[in-house]
Image (tube, rainbow, N blue to C red; front, top):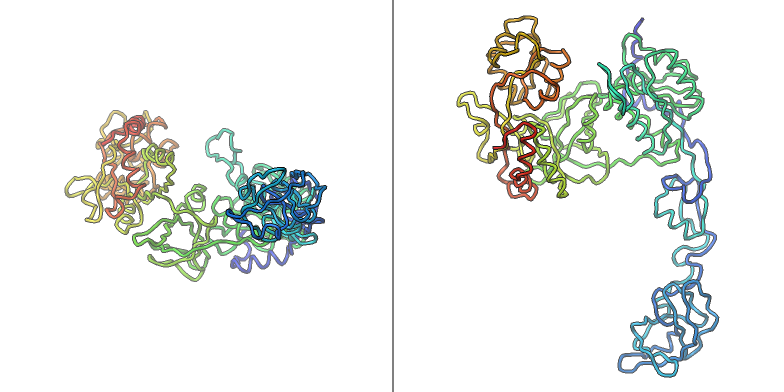
Length: 638
């Protein structure tokens, strides 16, 4: 099948301008809903009460309704006696007897003020008198302790205006005004379609080479966050007739159509051709100078937006928020999204592709001098976990090829007022961290873990940008673990021992029954034997480099960042061997030739050693239940 190329790649601004001009989005309609169903809806017009709130003058305390002039001279030494009218006014009790000079009426909080009274004396300022009187010991000014009609909300005063999103506060105001139904903008219906043979709905079972559909649920949630109603069409396989039918039904039933996947160049890519035929004017942009998000396709079909997001989750969500959200919010009657931002320092160099506007997700932490630092979360456009780890993103201009280390950058926040974590762990990641962090989470401490690799963590610790840096680095000259890589600003805290070794598929004669050194020698002797490497800076990579002694066998360039990725590559047949810890190999049923213990320890900046969260981590590390959990995972606590 012929591969369709991208249309002319446009800048972000030009693509957005073309799309919004062709769409000219406005509210899709108005409906009236009961007050109880108005939460989260957008008010379609100004709302003003038909009554005053409160609707009558009322008491704000328990006490006695009086004429202020009668008690002007009252004091503890010279109380004023007032004759009680005999009436007691409670909430919902209309007064019948007027307060005349020298009299008072017993009244409860919220009770309507009787005729003639112009103040209320608190019951605490009075004593019972003889023969139906009350002794007042404190003067009160006119209007004291009462709320006049309309002092909260006046009849005809606008309490909600067009475009207001209804929260519990607005519901309370409308209820107080007696408003039982609200005119709101109709939520735009947005069809959500995922495309690809490889997709399985969450909760299903994965076959080989399949993945769960993450885009559908996350796009649907983002639609709801921005005033729309997501209509799930599910995952459509790579079948042109089925996709065409789904698109036709979605366009007929919904106000907007969002697809994910099917935008990149490749055999069998017919999504753009189908979208182009849906209606006038058709595709207005296909290919935008963004990273992530270049394959984005924007179209308008007879007044309805049809957007094909890239298939990778990070690309899909960035392009959704940049291009879809503004129009979606107009369809829903919402004001433009108000993005919060703050200034932060980038601790490392951030490379970028010249000619493409790039969005780089970052995680915030406190730096050495108390300033906010933004650690880049480099996980690629296929990552969904990056959203959970990041607080926001920085933008790299299309004319720049990098942001230098130390740059002060504006961070656009995913949520306003982010709370910096109580503890930042940056370095080599290990599942052994989980039982330790669980203890801190149960104590209400927030923990952020950044997988920077052992060397990356040590450097972050030296710069004062994290609280703990897990590492497992063997010093080549001395054979000593970890300590030689620290300087005087860092303390070394022992963690646990992990068994590193060669992982392979059971039954492979090249490895079965051999020591780790023999297994590596057998692998190097077979040109068809593929290895899987590790990323530079990882402790495991240093061990591998020592084993390989400068040789680069087939597969050397495959350099994932985790033990799990190494084991998955071997288990799935992408590679025949690699170096990983036993705890990662065991769940996949891989063969394992132990190389020896490695020391997984922690570099702790001395300046941060006494922080409450650091002390809590070190105390948790020593707890018997945590040590037992580590042993169950296959580790040996130091």
